[in-house]
Image 1 (cartoon, rainbow, N blue to C red):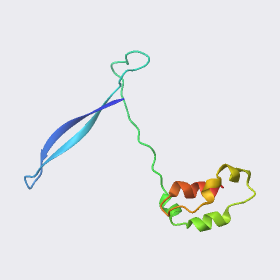
Image 2 (image 1 turned 90 degrees about the vertical axis):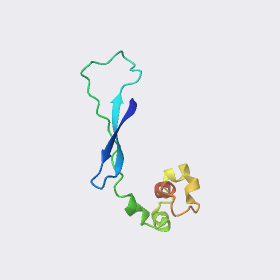
Image 3 (image 1 turned 180 degrees about the vertical axis):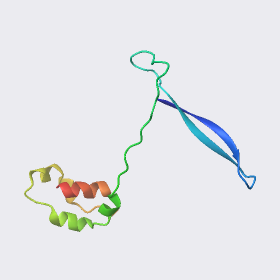
Length: 98
């Protein structure tokens, strides 16, 4: 996919000029030949990651306290038992799996 931008200048009520950009989408190097002339493209955004703020509120010590030491997957993530910075969400998530 190739994205180009069309810039439009807009004058606001207080005579401030601002620049607005709008994306234009096109296929670049299609693998199966040229697309139909009436093809419409609709790019998608990844879904929101709702609830991560709630996970951030759980202390890592609480998650590790609930971890099952006899879980077979615990050996797959032995490094996560170390202490990580509070902001290391990925490490705390792995610790919950261990």
